[in-house]
Image (tube, rainbow, N blue to C red; front, side, top):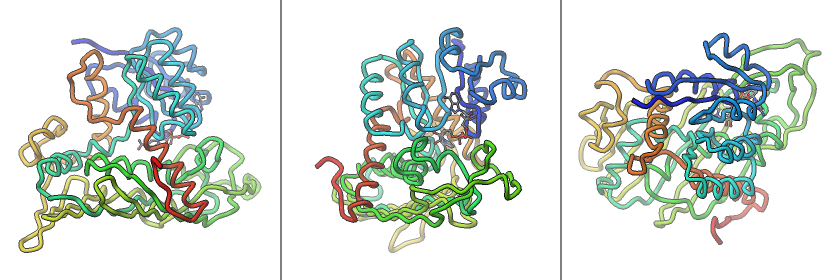
Length: 380
Ligand SMILES: NC(=O)c1ccc[n+]([C@@H]2O[C@H](COP(=O)([O-])OP(=O)(O)OC[C@H]3O[C@@H](n4cnc5c(N)ncnc54)[C@H](O)[C@@H]3O)[C@@H](O)[C@H]2O)c1
C-alpha cells in the first residue's frame, strides 16, 4: 500500500482536527506541521516528527504528497499557490481565499497544475446528506421547488468574544456568510444538484464595537481576561445574514446565518421541498434523514450501510446505530481526496477549487446585495 506524507499548516482549532483525521486514514502519515506561533508545541503534544514556523521551509524540505491548509482565510491563497508551484497536492480549508480575485487565480492554477486541489466542505460527507443527494438524483422527491434552512452558532455572542474572523483583512468582506453560510450553500447545492443564480441579502451587526483580547485566542476559545486585557475595536462584518435565493431550475429558497444565537452552538439544517416528497436534515441529529410525504407517515431513516443509497455505502464506516459525526465527515472527505491522487476515475464528491471559486462569488454577491439592498444576479 502506498503511504502518503502529509504536512499540516496552521495548528489551531481545525489544524489539530486535520492531524487526528489524517491518522485515521491508515495510509497517510503526518510528517510535519507548520505554524507561525505553535508548531513546536503541537509537534510535541501530537507526536509529529518535524515542525516549522515557516510553511515554505516545510514544503521545500519535506518532500510531501499533500499539504493541509488550516490557517486564516487571507493566507490560503499564497500557501496554496506555493504548494502547487512546488508540485504538492493541496487540501485547503474553506472559504477558499479572502477575495474573488485570488480565488480566480488559484482555480486557474489548480486546473493547469494536474495536482489535487480540494476544499474541506466536509458537510457533503455526512452519510445522510450524501444519501439524499443520490435519492434526489433518482427522482424520489420529484422536481425541487424550495430550499430553506439555517446555519447558526453562538460562539461570538458576547461582546468579549473574539476571533481573527472579525478582521476584514483576515476573513474577507463577509464573516458569517463566508465562514458558515458558504458551508450551507455548498451543502444544499451539492445535495439538491441546483446552483444558486441570484441572491437578496440583509445583514445586521449586533456588536458594532467589540472588546478584543490583547492576547492571541484560538477559534472557539472560552478564555476570559481582566478588563484591562481588552481593547475596543469597530466591527465591519455581519453577525447575522438573512438571504433569499433563486436556483437554476427555478426553485426558490431562503437561509438565516448567524454566529450569535445563544444555545445554537453549531447547528446547520435544511428542508428541501419537492413535488412528490420533502426532505429535512439537521446536523444535531446528523445520522437521521426525515423524508416527508403528504398522504402517509413521514419516513425517518437512520444512517447505516444497508439503509443508505448504494452509491453512498462507501462513505458509511460503521454499522447502523453506531453514530458518525463531524470528525467522520472529515475522514470521508480526506479519504476521497487521497484516493484520487493518481487515480482520475475515483469518486470525487469533494469540493474542488472551481466549487470554492463559486462559493467565493456567492459570498461577494451576497455582500453586494446587502450593500445595495436589492437582488443581485450571480452571472448577470
Ligand atoms: N471545515 C470546517 O468545518 C472548519 C472549521 C473551523 C475552521 N475552518 C477553517 O479553517 C481555517 C482555520 O481556522 P481555525 O478555526 O482553525 O483558526 P485558529 O485561529 O484556531 O488557527 C489558525 C492557526 O493558523 C496559524 N497561522 C496563521 N497564519 C499563519 C501562517 N501564515 N503560517 C503558518 N501558520 C499560520 C495561527 O498561528 C493559528 O495557530 C479557516 O479558514 C476556517 O474557516 C474550517
